[in-house]
Amino acid sequence: MKAIVIGGGIGGTCAAIALKRFGIETAVYEAVKEIKPVGAAISIWPNGVKCLNYLGMKEPLRKLGGQMRFMAYKEYLQGQTLTRFSMDPLIQSVGEQPYPVARAELQSMLLDTYGRDEVQFGKRVTHVEESADSVTAWFDDGSSATGDVLIAADGTHSVIRQHVLGYATERRYAGYVNWNGLVEIDESIAPSDQWTTFVGEGKRVSLMPVSDNRFYFFFDVPLPKGLPEDRATLRDDLQRYFAGWAEPVQKLIGLINPDTTNRIEIHDIEPFMQLVKGRIALLGDSGHSTTPDIGQGGCAAMEDAVVLANALQTNSLGIEDALLRYQEKRAYRVKDLVLKARKRCDVTHGKDMAVTGQWYEDLKTETGERILSGMCETILGGPLE
Ligand code: FAD
Image (cartoon, rainbow, N blue to C red):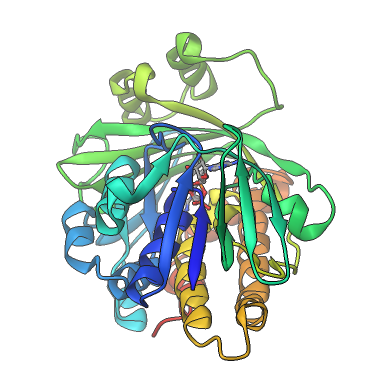
């Protein structure tokens, strides 16, 4: 069997690694010459970590991951702690640690594990065609590739999604802008072993440790779409949006490098239940685009990869049947993740300030039990024990 994988991001590389490990011939085609991930870092929750362990990346992942032993929420004006608790109960319940990692390093690890030289860069798919016993991808340079099965891991702007669904999907603006980047750890801003989040006014400022003494930071602000803001205005914009916020937030804004800070208008796509058509499977953001509010988009792509490779490994009833089994296992799971993230997004970002205000109040009595049990439920819904 030959699998054609479209897209060399998290989903595509994980799928290719998984298929290769099961002895399935793979070819990966990536549109750009050099992959530049959209965000600075990503938190890989234990369900994602288990998938990477399963795919043979246990040791390299540990070297990239920050140590997130505690979690804390702080109120925005004085920086007083609303709640702080250990992440140990979560790790004990699910049997694995979360790892925040720099995206460029994650991408490198995935490409190295698969075989960087085996990825064909600069190959942008324009359309796909299926016949009774094969599937062909056509690229914008006029070339094509034919295989037995095609994995569409071409991201949230997927061109293959419409072929699978038979209709075009629209991305939905989630109502907030996210700025993210990396900065050297400064313990006067937040402890180096803690996921720290300042909350107020429907906004948030968050810091997570990654390897090599760096914080992954992000700022979220509810804003209209399409504002004329860019790197040139970035520090001024953040100073304006976070005027009056506590000293550590001001310090962070002073420290960040606007040239390496990303500004992203956050979107998702209304979940759909069809992930496959014939010999083509959607995987990762092409099949389920979520807001990053529960940090599960990339983890879900890793889960997809493991489940898809397992389904294709047992294909005695044919490829179409294997893909339908993949869809059966994934459709509800990924829909649930997208909707959970959307719900969290609305509470965090002041869609209804009364609800958000109540959440701030609830944080004062949070012992960690409620937050961690919600996370456990999400993590344990993954495919691996
Ligand atoms: P992508 O990473 O988008 O990769 C798709 C690839 O396909 C790209 O390399 C692209 O160049 C290529 N491509 C596109 N079109 C074509 C074409 N026509 N032909 C060939 N190749 C093509 N997830 C988490 O798990 N934890 C987090 O903490 C987290 N934080 C996030 C924070 C932010 C601000 C954002 C925006 C997202 C976050 N996510 C997180 C989600 C995560 O980034 C995505 O879910 C993940 O990157 C999806 O991987 P993918 O491979 O499906 O898509």
